[in-house]
Image 1 (cartoon, rainbow, N blue to C red):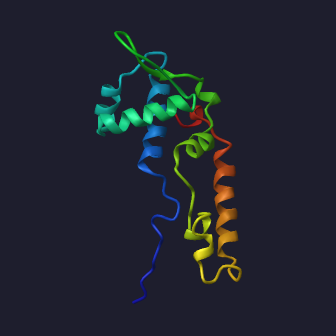
Image 2: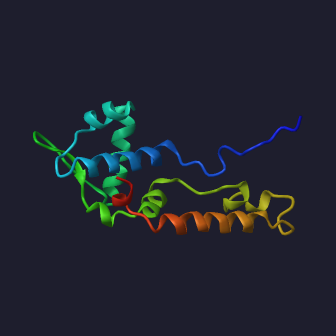
Image 3: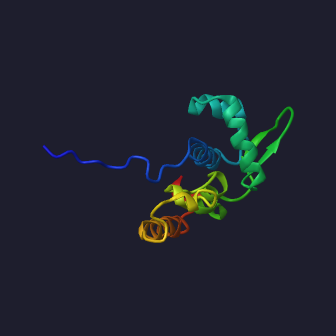
Length: 142
């Protein structure tokens, strides 16, 4: 019997990015109301601490607005039609190194560097991935 190997993590987004997208979707569905970090953490069953980091990053990127104090909370800073999925993913992922040689610090460690076309093929595939995502906004997925 031949075993078929399928790479399950070739292009897997981090949970940080996954939940960043989910938070934006939740906020879009519940706009214009503000949501609390506790409410979001409970809804998605993730830690409040992890969610606070996500909210902080989304705020830095300009996708959400945070308001402190009584009556405060989190809401979208932009209309869902103005939030591009590719840009969100690029802003929340730490890197897109599909293979070791994508990382600048590791590129010279490969013994077949210079004789390998794999990096170029994967680089183009990743480009197509983002080219496709560029066509979609948050409004398209909620």
